[in-house]
Length: 532
Image 1 (cartoon, rainbow, N blue to C red):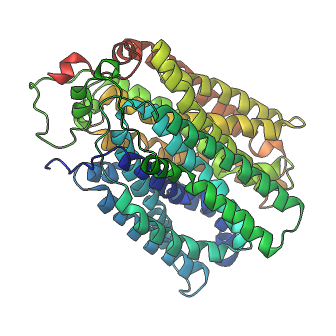
Image 2: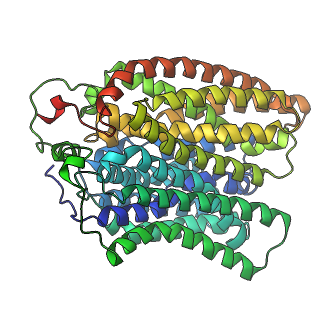
Image 3: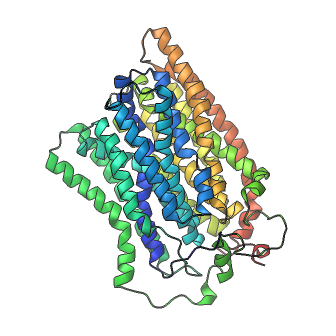
């Protein structure tokens, strides 16, 4: 593939990041499954196990990102986004036809495939904007990953608010919105998400720009949580509902204020070359994403350099990272897929608030870990996998709290788990790029995501689903009530995270020398062997 044409200038990367915020909201459309799954159960007459399997189809679809990863190295971002638009339109469109009974008696296997296709749009949307922005901001990859993954995390709350205030809790209208609204949104924004040439060193205002984006995203998350709770407590008029939604739109548009400000108040003076945090050749190498763009000696790459997928696949650190991620997100997604049933079993009257709490904490984990890890990796060369270790330990605590079912522990456990779930996602992304390079980041990252659906099948369907149905059968009902519905599941998941803790400690010890080499100067630097 020839090298892509890179958009020059200091503003385009920030325009792309602002547009990526909206695409990331679209890339979280799989989080809507808990909102429309009750309609599938009632209209189509499915039992809990059938519904759980459809939930796994949703997990598989959003996490199978190998093809998008390959496509990112062969086609421009707009082409990758276009595929996502087509999948979103046809997937949710057919799903709407089935649930509205426009097409009657749709086979179960066809519905499974339809949900898989619909949510696979997430992989195309998310991979396109993540790979593009990681390459546009190669020196701030942890921060960028935290921001973008954070917006995916908060997308569930955005959809919940739209579902409650605009769509009046109509799952049928929600499916129509997903089928038509999201493709139109991404089609309108695809032009702005493009490869750009970053400055050879960090601009003096870059830290402030990232800080502004992070603050706005936190404001959005807090605002969404507040209006979700308020909407559950009091009845809001249609006018008030639309005003509240308008504020959400303004907050989502806020990151675009950065390129507007750069246009109105341009900064002509760049930092001196002596103050650059990385030499120009480092950035040029990071952006060499086409075959033949950089000529290297024919030797096996070292950690920190660009690995092809087949080269990374045989490395111990690659598999250690995969298992650490798989054990973390696999156990977390089990709770997420069954959160409504867990809430009912443990005595929660309103699972909507529980879902919103998980979404908010998921966002906090994703954004916060990006900020914190970036500080510690640049100042203390502390590997990002250290924070995955901390997340595993706290997840053990959260599962124990769920299993104990003491007064007030449901919300405390959900808070802890939501944060840790977000940390696992956010830390995996920059770690892959730092250990195995940006050149083939898309496919390496896409393979890591496979841990999500595998975990969902093993832990959600085979473990949680079967145990839940067995306990419900004992009670003589389809809805299980009481701590015993999920207690064994929580104990097993605590053990799973215990294994994840051990593996993440091993990985952290192994990669510490790599981070000491990459961040010895206080910012990312390619090893000398990768430049020559």
